[in-house]
Amino acid sequence: MSNLINILDAPTAQQTILRRLAWDELNIPDPILDRLEELFGQRISPDEAVRRILADVRQKGDAAILDYTQRIDGVELPGLVVSKAQIQAAYD
Image (tube, rainbow, N blue to C red; front, side, top):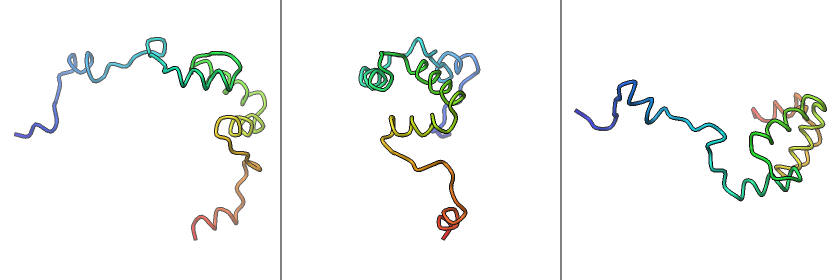
């Protein structure tokens, strides 16, 4: 018999490998919190950052996506539409 896969009963699995910490239980490293503070002007949780980004995208649409792409990734996109020629070039 192989020891490669441990098969656990449901109660054991729930107490071990299936246990997931809630957001408020996670210890967020300072470099991540520092970057969020740099991006949003105040020290916020990753959960709050996602909430703000989603709200901005709902309100401002593509403009918010372009803004966050530039602010977070440092990439300034000319737009979000990919032309048929660009799609074809990707296949070639």
